[in-house]
Image (cartoon, rainbow, N blue to C red):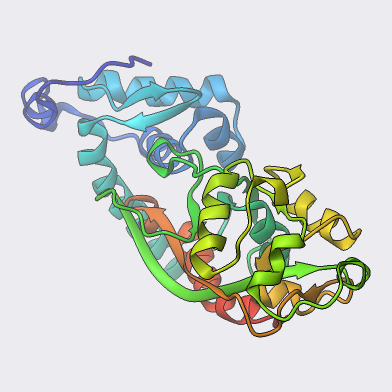
Length: 317
């Protein structure tokens, strides 16, 4: 499979071949479509239940037949060239039409199958995604769900994930986003730790508390200072970039951690440090690549997340 980029992909696609001379091979087109949707040959081969070399030969044969390059390699994945972007919508429409014909002939519902990758923070992945995945397993057992639990922002343009749960709106035009909820949180600690710390009557008393910080503690301190808590680096004897580990440290009485209300209020091992303050508010966005959003399986997962997340964030089952 060639990995270059055509300078003028649309014109070259038309000029390099006589469309009337092409014998259409749906197997090659399907191999191209699934590879485009999955983002790699290995994932597409699993989705189509064929070997990767066989799939690669089919995609390469389509490229040779059309006289264009359809993919370029980015890291371990594949990204559509301009020619590929132009062609994929036509092939997808053909696939949907073929599916409708099959449904009409067989009288059976279309199975939703294949691979979908969801990325979210560690805390959201552990807290919010299991009930969503349980419902997906019941409604679409043919799906393979890959949960990318990471506090880093994954690049959807590079197909590091299909859907992202984020607290900021993306700026890239290639991405589509839906604001599905607003989350809120506060400071939590174990009752035993709060008993040792003594009465806390306001934000000023946090000057004698110990916090479990992130790897970007300066921003955390600045935020707390802005709210009125006079804390410094001396208040952060523990630093950890894993929110799950932070949460467990707080449960064990090692200090104060920040977390969402829906999770913290339901945890019997934790208590709000100051019941009335401080409150943090942040939006929850669902994000997907514009092309992947048109994939039926991605759309199913996207819409189910949009339906379930608001209730889950409030602490619902």
